[in-house]
Length: 155
Image (tube, rainbow, N blue to C red; front, top):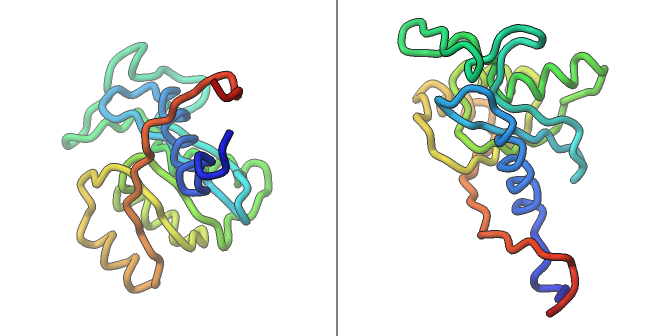
């Protein structure tokens, strides 16, 4: 592989978030999240039901006020994975396929996230933006160029 074809860190982490989103079980939004500390992935998450309970793709959505409440959001699942394993999220970054909802934004800020990189500008809540600015946490939209996966050899 030629050096200039190597993925940037941003592309690498966002591509991982996109791949992880393929595990989502709520078809309202296939979302993947990757928590990163010092250029190392410390946790991942995707949209899905509470462990060992029904998922949307099995029994349908549980709707309340226009939101599916059966699903735990990808960002929350990544944070919860760290909490369960005793991994600090202070001074980490998150790469997520969709701009975080207001509740996920609040949780990410409380967890010490220092930067949010997202792909889709999905309904950014004005108060989420206000909080990010007040906490001086940058939020950056980033799309990944189409990846050409091969066997690793130059052809």
